[in-house]
Length: 210
Image (tube, rainbow, N blue to C red):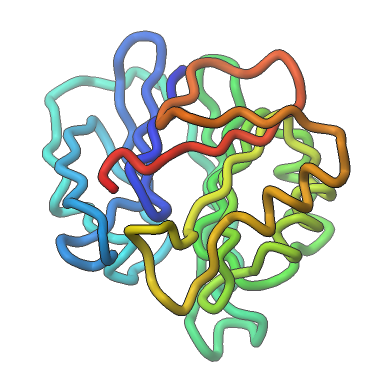
């Protein structure tokens, strides 16, 4: 299993046989500072219909047959803290591949219910937004990460030095909160996570298209 951070909330997930799943590809020009994703994949899933998360039509499709390589379960949540009244619905995606459980939180903007938490708790990899404004912020993401207790956590939907929306924050505060807890090693300096880490960690992936 390999996870590549394309940028914003977009990831390319590959299984050991080379099958590829694109998650939340963004439309051309929709995220400042990010080049177009240019992805080729066997399948695509999008957490919701906003332009910075839904470019399924722009992903080139292969003719590969999956044969059950990926098992994807959507969990319906809200994009805001007013039950969707401000920004609508959002799907969490539970992705099982090569024996690993990956959870992509999409643009979650609300707290988890007990039932939703039960479905994603103790996953292997948690992909979670931390930038705030449109989603939960760093403090909320930190508390949610503690509740989910994944093996690896990867922040997404944040602003960097040369990319991202001005109204969202960087991932620095999230990193500081995780570091202060002292329970996770910090891995940085790459755009790719290969396999499931052997110990609890915070993985700071750099956007491939930045």
